[in-house]
Image (cartoon, rainbow, N blue to C red):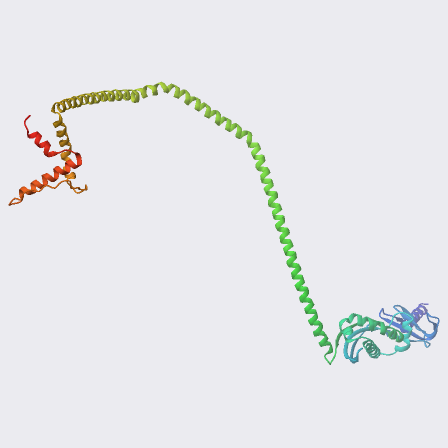
Length: 415
C-alpha cells in the first residue's frame, strides 16, 4: 500500500513538473513597452476586418501549440537624426536643414495593425532608416513651400508644418511621430547670413531707437519723479511750517496770560518804585531847597550885592570924574572967554600942531596964490628956514584959514 502511494506521488510530481514546463513555454507575458503578436489564428479587427493574428499588449496569453507563432514589437521611441542638404526653398535658394525626430510604433489599433503588417519581424535600425527617409522627403516638400526667411526665422512654425505634413505618411506606415525639432538651417551661398546681417542691423537700429526712447522716457520719468518729489518736499515743508506756525500761535496764546500777568506785575513794581521815589523826592525836596539856598542863592545874593557896591563905586568915580571934567571944561571955557580971539587961535594951534607933518606932505594939491622972494645968504641956512616957515604958514592958511604969521605977531605984542 505504501509503495503504491509513493509511485502515485512521484507520478504526480513528474506530471506537475511537465505541466509547469509546458505552461512556461506556452505562456507569454507582454511588457508595457512591447506588443506580442500571436499569428496563426483567425480573428476580427476593431474595424471589422478579418485578420490572421491577435495582439497582446501589457498582459499575458497562452500560445496554442503548433497553431500559433508569437512575435514581439518594440514600442520604445526611436531617435532619428535628420540631415537634409541642398533642399531648394521657395525662390530657388538651396538650404541645409538639420533636426531631430522621435518616432515609435503605435500601441493602439488601427495604427498598430498597419505597423504589424509593415514592420513585423524587422529590427529597429530598418524601421529607423525607413522613417528617416520618409521624414527627409517631407522636409524637402515643406522647404519647397517656404522662403528661406520663413524657414530660418520661425523654426517652430516650420517644425509644426513638417509635423502636419509627415503625420499622414507616418500613420499610413504605422509609425507615430512624437516630436520634431529643427536645430539648424544653413545655406552654402550665404543668403541667410546676408539676411541675418540686414536683420541684425535693423534689429540693432531698432534696439538703438528703443534704447534712446527708453532713455528719453526714463529721463522724462526721472524728471517727473524729481518734480513730484520736490513738490512733495515743498508740500511737506509747507505742512511742517503750518504746523510750526500753529504751534507758535498756540504757544503764544497759552503764554499770553502769563506774559500779561508778568507785564502787569512789572508795571505794578515800576509804579510802586516810582511812587516810592516820588515820596523820597518829596521828602528830599526841603533838604535840596535848603542846600540850593545855601550853595547857590546866598552866594548869588552876596555876589549881586558885591557887584552892586562895585557898580556904585564905579558910578561915583565916573560921576566925580565927569564933574571934574565938566569943571575943567567950565574953567577952560571961562579962560577962552577971557582970552577972546587969541584963545581960539591957541586952541587951533594945539589941535593943528600934530597935523603939521601930514599938512606939509604932498598929499594935497598945491595952488600958488602968492610968491615970496627971499634974499640969499652966504651959507644958505637962513634962506632954507625962511622957505620952510613961509611954506608951512601958507599951507596952514590955505587948509584952515588961520594966518600963523599974524597970530604969532599978536602973541608977541604985550597985552
